[in-house]
Amino acid sequence: MSHWLLKSEPDVFSFDDLKKRPKKTEPWNGVRNYQVRNMMRDQMQVGDLGFFYHSSCPQPGIAGVVRIASEAKADPTQFDPASEYFDAGSKREEPRWLLIDVKWQADFPTFVSLDMLRSDPALADLLILRRGNRLSITEVSKKHFDRICQLGGLKLPAKA
Image (cartoon, rainbow, N blue to C red; front, side, top):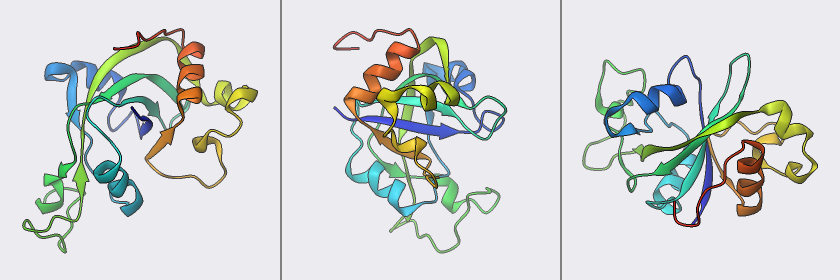
């Protein structure tokens, strides 16, 4: 099992929005970065766990845990001229952009702020804390995943 951190701006789509969706599941669409697309296609597996990170907001940080709920598949927004994620160069027979479905797994009793992440020496090499990192999805080591769950006050069972 791999672990991930997925970033979303809460005024666009928040962790609370995910919890309100039918089956608490939502397509993670709009990714327009080849490196992230390749991670979804080649590395992410159904059942992997990830953090839902609120970015570009007054209090950035991790609100809770999600589970990867589907394999990578074509992102339909790339074909919709009315979508802000439309890509005129993408073809239905060879889609350029992919998405995965994410499902709410657990709230953190304590919101894990960016300041908390930065101030914890055990997380010094966490990818999201590296200068210049702007990827919307990053891999998280098991060690970092467990530590962040601890900071958030959450103990996940071995088979959540």
